[in-house]
Image (tube, rainbow, N blue to C red; front, top):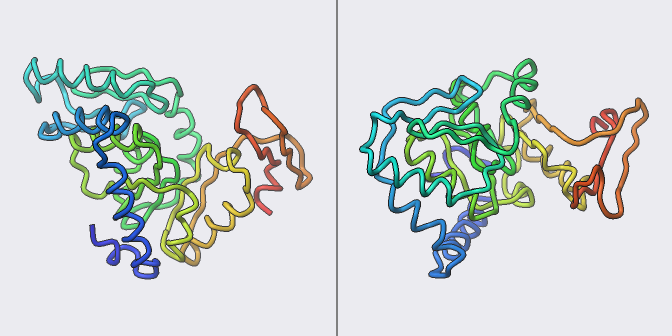
Length: 255
C-alpha cells in the first residue's frame, strides 16, 4: 500500500523499513507462524457476496456464498483462531460467540462518534478487527489497524479476505509505532489498551502527537471513581486482571 498518499507527514522511510522487517519476521517457516498463515492462505480465495456491518453481529457472507465443503473448511479454520476475544461475528452463517461483548462497548461509543466519512482512522490494538468492520458504514477513507500479535493479524486478514473491504488495513504494529505517524490521523481509537501500558503517559503523548490538528482521540479504559485527577498504579493485578498498570479517574485521563 502507498502509505505516503494517506500519511504525507509520516516518517515514511522508517515506516517502510519497519514494515519490511515485520513482513520478513511473519513469513518465517516456523510453526508459530505457519499455524495461522497456512489456514489463511487456504481460504483467501473465497468471497462473501453479502456483508452487514451495521448490526451488533458483524455479518460476513451467508451459507449460500460458498460450497458446503468450503464452509466446513472455513469453520475448521475459524476454530483454529480461538480464542476469539472480540465479537460477535457471523461468517458464512457460522456463528462466533466471542468472549467479549464488543457490541456493548461500540454502542456506548456511538453517541460520541465523530463523522468518519473520508477520514483517516487508526485502531490501536485492533485484535480481530471487530471495531474496524463496525466503522465501515461511516465510509472512512482508511482504517489502519495496529496489531502486533500474529494470531489476531491473520484472523483479521482471513475475515477481510472474505469481506474485501479495501479501506481496511492491518499492520503488525504496536502503539509504540505511533511515533512514525506525526499529525497523520483524523480519528484514533485506543480501546482497552492504555491501562496495560507500563508508561501510560508516554503512550498518551504518542497518541496525541499522531493526531492531525483538531483530530479526535477516543480512549476507553478501566477507571476509578472521583473528580480529582488521580490514578492508581497497581503493583501486581487490579480487578483480578494481570498486566494492569494504570487506572485513572476520568479527569486524570483528560488532563
